[in-house]
Image (cartoon, rainbow, N blue to C red; front, side, top):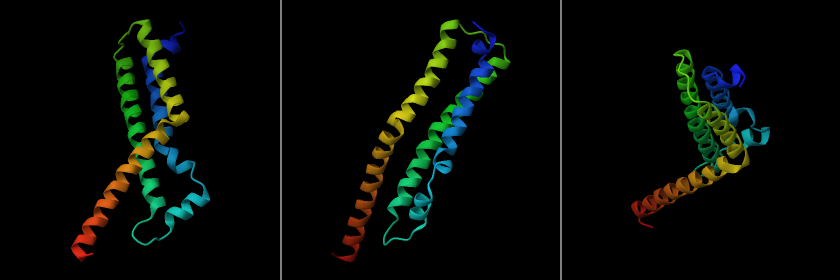
Length: 135
């Protein structure tokens, strides 16, 4: 196996690169239409902004997890920890699976669950406001 494949520092840097891309995902791939909708004002709340914040939260959590894992792998590499070959291949396969899952819809699946939670909170707040106003 080539040295670059088995080097934990290289693997860690790979995780960090993917983590940084996920952190920036929601900002760099925003269309002019998305930005205009998020900047708009609406009665009650801006549904586009709520969705953008939820996306940003998902991207940030995913990116942060990968960054921390990447830094940890780099630290192990700097300490000259020599894991078994099976572990090395497992780490490469894991990052590939993470990239593919994110690209193929894991982000949207988690986003829809998060939007449902936000909608429930908004509904509850509206009900509380209506009770307080005597409606």
